[in-house]
Image (cartoon, rainbow, N blue to C red; front, side, top):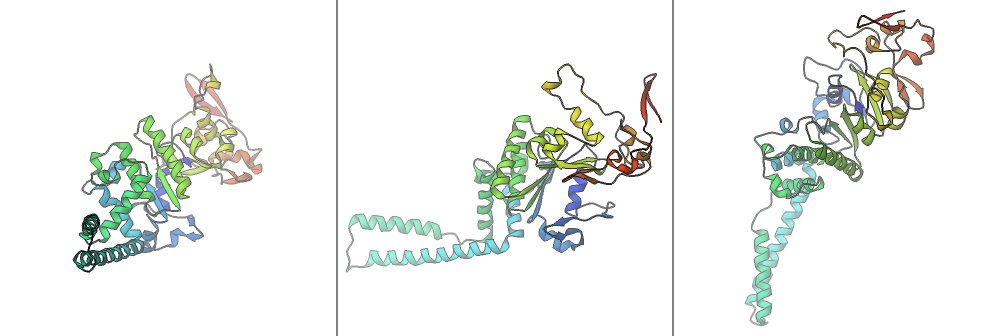
Length: 363
């Protein structure tokens, strides 16, 4: 999971993984390793083959993510045709072969009806005529790639728990509810059985009941499709329920990365402590919820050193001079904070003072 407040850079990070950052934005440094391959070194054509097939993404607003002029079935079918063309054509060949067999069976049935050497009973004639009509109906339409893709779309729509799948395929995005549109987006994302599904605020603007249904469905689909999910959200409750490992982002930087269990039991970074301390709890009866002082910085002119230092209760002199690296302080537990760097343990600390309603600090 990737958690952080609105505007901290979560969605941009997700778009960076897929090389979808819009100009004038660009990736300056870093790497994205996926199945041992450096994605940032791939050409656009190579990256396009991975998007939608190996890595897929559910965007924040399903209404704006779906094309309003095409039906749901048309849009999901396009994903299959783009990334599973070979599989679709194999299925199409099988259907054409089956149609050819049925045609031959119809000829055999016609011949049996005309064979005077082997007279048939009325019951046998009725059965043969019924079979002949059934086979004629099955072979009346010549199968094409659109039929195969639409049938595949119906199968994946059923997987995400949508009733009347065929009816939904014929509808347009504006005819569906918010929860239904989100299910369609998830179906589209899972259509090619990706290794990684990036879910960017998948429950935004949905009511609580629908949110729970979507999250439960994602957990179920993760197990069935064996797909890894990168869940991006500002809701710590969702993170605690859904994620195995969590990265906390503040002002464009990862400040803490650990298992969900370790993070919620014993957060190390001051920002993470503030977030978790602000969660309402029955155990905190008659206690005030903690708050993080100050305001989120303007990222056009970000603070020097650690970007959290203007709001930090544990601020040291070094914090506004040197950016802390993301350091492994225990097994698979990473924190970007000078408090855990032995080099700066003797750095002078700031003390916060209240005076005339203003927050001041001094060494």
